[in-house]
Image 1 (cartoon, helix red, strand yellow):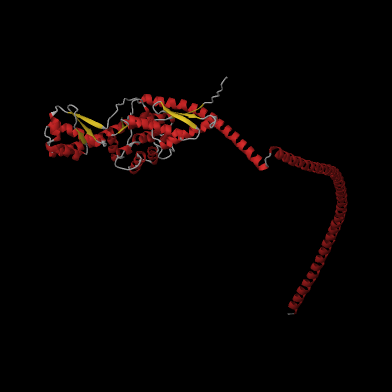
Image 2 (tube, one colour):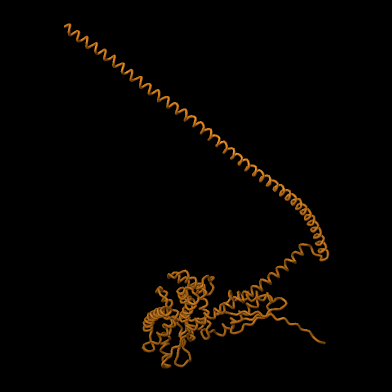
Length: 510
């Protein structure tokens, strides 16, 4: 037990001694390490001190350099500002000099204005003196003198205007005449045709004189029945082997002529047979008119016409105007208008269609009141023709003002066709009345001494009094006479108005 205690005690003492020795060894190590760290710290401190000195030296150098640069920039800025101040000072000096010059010029201008004002006042005073002197000398007031001057200026202006109008009209007329002659000549050459004047009565030849009695019938019953059914007068006179049919309606007259010819061939002439043949003839004539309308439309190359227009067009076969067949006249107008439209670049379809239908109103003008041009325009409008065609039909006799090239072409074609030699004829009474009307229109103007209708009414020559109408006024007179003729008279073609002014000086030697 004791041994164990001593062993334990020995172990404890041994452990304590070991611990003490270990602590000494650790302290020795710690001291050595501390000395090493202190040495390192001294080295780092010395190195830091040396770097600090270097940094301070570098900072001083940088600060000195920056200061030098700033001082240099400041010097440059001061120099630049000084230069700008010098420039501004020079500019101010220039501006001051200019202002002085402007002020000097303004004083001169004001001085001149005062002088001008004085001169103006002096001029006004002299003007008033002159006006007063002129009024005293001329015995006219200012208003009276102004009216005289204005009247003189107006007269001179009218003379100049009339002279200029005459020059322009002459130049334009020359150019237009050349082109019109060329176009119309080409159109006429392409559609030349012959004319045979037609009458408003029809003559039926009889195989023998005995047939006159059969036409009249017992107590005149046959002729009365024929006239009542056809609406045509039968004139039985002393003309050998012929009777005359008279009626203002050419269709009824043609129906009567054909029916009477059939009756004469058949030999059976009595009221019932007359009625039967007249009805059959009426159907045949209606069919013939339709065929004639289709033929003319085909020859004119006009498509798409309404059947009623075709029928009315065919009725013109039996309608005449101054002896000219209206259907043939319409066909020729269509061809002329088409050729002229092609030459001028106008609408060919409108021109030829309107020209073909321009006299369509004559087919019903004995049934409807009004000018045939407006009747035809209304028919064409109701039967589906375009507004341009309707306008050209209605304007071909100036019942409405022409507005299109095609309308003027229809007017020209109508005049050309009607003015051809032999195309139309008039009775002597109508011819004389037309010439008298021309002379009456011309002599209705002031200053006209005499008027003569010459060249079959194609020209009217107006003799004026030279002391009332001068050369320039004669131009206006010719235009006024032509305008009044257009408004008040109807005539084929055109009428030339020539105003003649002759000055004669007469004296006697004694």
